[in-house]
Each structure stands twice: as C-alpha cells, then as structure tokens.
Image (cartoon, rainbow, N blue to C red; front, side, top):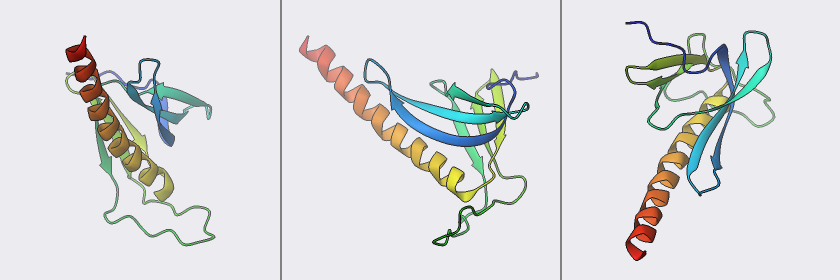
Length: 124
C-alpha cells in the first residue's frame, strides 16, 4: 500500500513553531523548503507521529558558529499511521533541536489544554 505525502512537495525542514489556535488548542507548525526552493508553512495534523533520525547525541554547537551541519541521511519523518507519510531532511543541529523542543512543548501544552477543557466541561 502506497502512502500519500503528508506535506505535498516538501523536502527540507526549515523551522518549527508551537502556536495556539483560537480555542487555546496548541498546534505544531513547520516551515519546509519545497522542490521549487520556495518555503511553505504546514500545520502538523493531530495524531501525527514524528520520528527523528539523527546522530545521538547531537554534535555540540560552539559560540560564534552560525551552523553545525548534520550528516547526510538525517531526517524527520511525519506520519499519520496507514494514511500518509513525509520524510523531511534535517540539515543542521539547530533545526533538529528546535523540532525536539517543539514536540516536547506541544505534548505538555496539549495535555494541559485537555485537562482545562475537561475541567470547563465539568463546571458547566
């Protein structure tokens, strides 16, 4: 079974952000470079599994170094099980750390939002 791409034409992860939507729900967003060298913003769907394939531990970043590159083959795989999948290249340590931090922050924010939502429903 061939899975369709989750992020159409995306090739390389550029940045990651945790944003809060109108109802307070946390959402993970990524900006990826496309084949046409343009950048596009994508919302990571709920239930998406993110797997990171990079050296462990990550190479250290020294003060004054603008970029520490990751080895070829480093990538982040975004997958909705059984539906769609996209693998994005990870080119620098900064981008990889940014993604790891955003995933962790999203998990904490989502559990806090769910607890608050449950509490609000119980109070009504």
